[in-house]
Amino acid sequence: MKRTVLAAALLAPLAATAALPAYAPVTDARLNKPEAQNWLMYRANYAGWGYSPLKQVSDKNVDKLQLAWAFSTGMTEGHQAPPIVNNGYMFVATPNNQVICLEAKSGREIWRYKKTIPDELQQLHPTNRGVALYGDRVYIATTDAFLVALDAKTGKEVWKTAVADWKSGYYMTLAPLAAKGKIMIGSSGGEYGIRGFVAAFDADSGKEAWRTYTIAGPGEPGGDSWPGDTYKRGGGSVWITGTYDPDTNLAFWGVGNAGPWMADTRSGDNLYANSVLALDVDTGKLKGYHQYHHNDSWDWDEVSAPLLIDLEHKGRKVKSLVHAGRNGYLWMLERTDSKVNYVDAWPYVTQNVFTKLDPKTGRPTYDPARIPATGKTVNFCPSLWGGKDWPPEAYNPHTGLLYIPAQNNLCSELTGEPVKYNKGELYLGVSIENVLTNVRMTPESKVHIGEVQAWDLKTGKKVWTHTYPEMNWGPLMTTAGNLVFGGGTNDRKFRAFNASTGKLLWEFPTNSGVTGVPSSFEVDGEQYIAVQSGWGVDAERMQGAFNAVLDKKTTVPQGGVIWVFKLPRK
Image 1 (tube, one colour):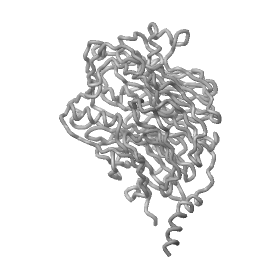
Image 2 (cartoon, helix red, strand yellow):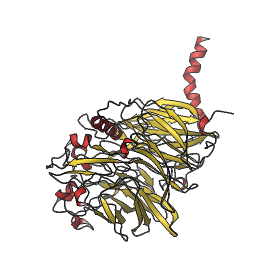
Image 3 (cartoon, rainbow, N blue to C red):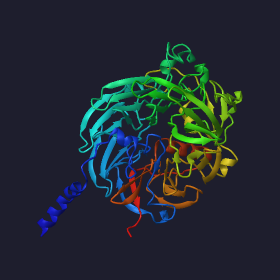
Image 4 (cartoon, helix red, strand yellow):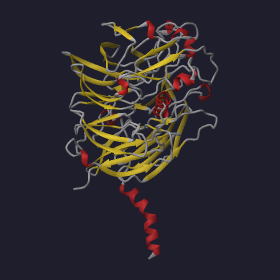
């Protein structure tokens, strides 16, 4: 009898594996039109909506949502990646370059991969924002600047390619973007004085197809916007996965701030820092751009890729690019096959740096008293964390609303310092202490700071706002069930809102703060809601700044857990 029980226990995982269907290769056709039951890429579709067409879980029954399963990742620090799901197979990336493949219905582990990184590598941002699926492979970008292809069925390494030199400060945290036989990634490390880029690699071989620098050099368009050889250390990190328009074959990438931070060290517009770039996927050629603000001194890196939304705005039909800027403005641009046009922009949080925008180009004019510089101390709003940092917005085609995880009523104070470049060392122009204690409260911030906002893009009007006492670092997901999901607060809760009204409908206390990107999928006719909980990186640093300024001791526990929810069986 004991032998029978033991045999059954040993065979149980094999039986569960057999129950899964054969792995379905992820094709261009599937990525162009993702099935509702799957979540095949970072934001579910190429347009970056963060939207699920599933509606079994709705505003009528979400209050009954319950835990289906949970899985500890074994890692600390910031868990920010979405659970990616392909026909019952779930792939989750975690800090420390780990990928876990799970049975999406049960949470049973199928395989686990972890890339070893050099002991001497300092992980300034110890996180990973997700994987890409293409063919029968899984792709991950690592903190030691490698792109790795794994067999989706076994987790075995198929190839790995060194993308850049980590000893110079290059690293990667974003989920790759897969399209037309290419795997595209962007480089981080602007705070170390690197020159940022977007690059594409052949999905089969790992061979580099093209590389486009985000910082223009001599002889290139925009190269004259950098004095001397400052472009070589110009920053321009690409932290977040791009969006893609199959009709024009253009991918859109958000670019970070210039380096070092103080603008008086690099006079000029500093193209293409703080911009959106439109790159041809076949060649990497720059087809268009828009710079949200020039000659940045505020660390307002505009790395979130714009959402592609076809809509009518103030009576005009627009193939738009929508971006909630770290600079505190909500931008509406127009995408074409050859350039990016400015349409409209307006502040969505308190902003005191821009005095006006050019009505034709959107170029801002600055208040000189709000521009930090070397040897000068300046206060400005929004804070250097921005009106919205990296956590993505979401768009619901049924409500027509854009949802933004915002930080409002918050300012910063920076003091510029002389800085000298040394390979592999921080190249900021401000002290680390200044960065880590930079939040400045306003009378309004004593009432609230974190927000979830809903905007009608047709009219440019805000429809509703949900507020939090302190911060909101919660990426958002919206669904056809008239719901918006997100976490991001230091009380560790994951929440669901009515997408039309903003009414809080459901909340669940997790083990840690939720800074993960939510996703939704369906298996055997049941809809699931999934998210990673795991506090760390910038959310923890911002909490430390609040603690220092307000003499508080708020602590958010770390530890990564994948939480998956569903409705109870009838």
